[in-house]
Length: 182
Image (cartoon, rainbow, N blue to C red; front, top):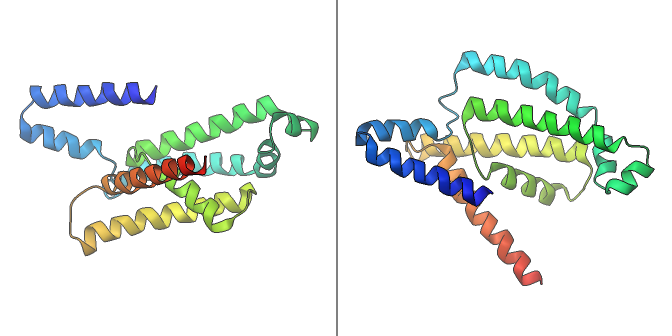
């Protein structure tokens, strides 16, 4: 499904590129890329006001998520109300992702990078420390990438381009690593 949607949006982008003026298209394209530096501060407070209570609600389920990670049957045997908890966590993740994407824009491989780096750094499957590490790694990665792009390299390229490039290479590394493990 992701390949189909990617192809559809790529085709729509090409179609728009043919239809509109190249200068207008360049402006549109720069707005469509995720950028940490173009966040509307009024929306930032609104998004933060929405995200903080949702995060606090989701953090109540950290130990329950540890049980769910064992599998459906084990979680039910441990007393977890499996279906409702999964639906609640799906809503929590959807709200947090929607708010973050609305504020900054889509950054494709950031989740893949942050999750794998956090697992690698901590070498644990307990969700509490992993969530804290993922937040820290995500902040350091985004702020570091933005700092390097703007201050060191003096480029105006959005951070999402760099994150997608690094994330794509890391994804290929993971695929090739798994292929050789067989």
